Image 1 (cartoon, one colour):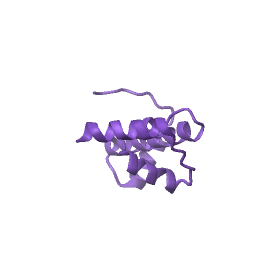
Image 2 (tube, helix red, strand yellow):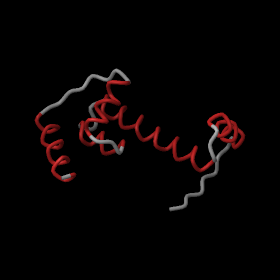
Image 3 (cartoon, helix red, strand yellow):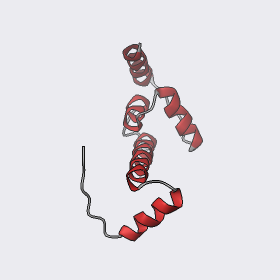
Image 4 (cartoon, one colour):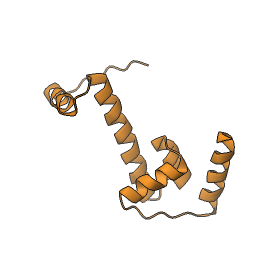
Length: 94
């Protein structure tokens, strides 16, 4: 999929690309991935998504997502629904 985006500050993107030592497309993919993870953390932290859905939004396994939450010092609350979703996710992967 190709997406065209008009950005008001193109020099900022070029500067960031150069600082990261990446091609523009690689840098944008990395920023989108990071943004998706950060948004999933925000949604989880505010109780808007479960652990399983947060992991799915971040495109991580449950255990990787738990590690990400720990990295950002986010308290992990697991309820019965989260446990069921984790089990379903594990079954889908097998």
